[in-house]
Image 1 (cartoon, helix red, strand yellow):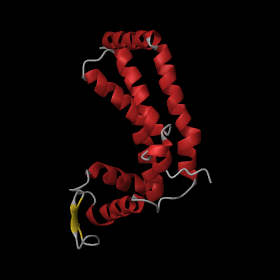
Image 2 (cartoon, rainbow, N blue to C red):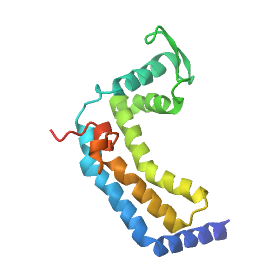
Image 3 (cartoon, rainbow, N blue to C red):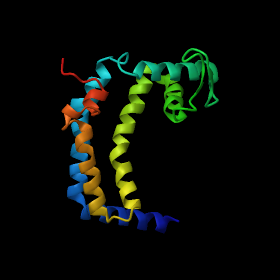
Image 4 (spheres, rainbow, N blue to C red):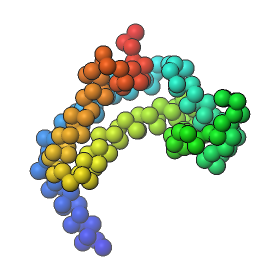
Length: 168
């Protein structure tokens, strides 16, 4: 067992050395997100805008009325509806569970930031699953992030608009 772990770590180290430039570029792109996206998102409480208030309420209703179940009847919107059968339940469930330690706003922001940080590695492994070689998968995951992080601000749907970072 120890030899298997040792061999695995050696293979991982060799892979990182061979693709160092791509990992550095991906890391720099993720570092860009902290001062320009995540820090303003953390410190400026604008969670009442867009549909974030609905997501916060869904997590609050889940925690206070349904927890530990994933779904249930929510009578407060749309003359009642089956909560978390129309939206995937993990997002609201994770916020509800983390809210015990971080509060609702802190839990939502933590889940949101973790999701964005996981996006590039998740896309890398998705492209690898399509049988692309490692270098092409890394380039694809790097390029995929550009419109999302805000280099196409005029199109909307970027992290700048999603996190309500207006620069004010």
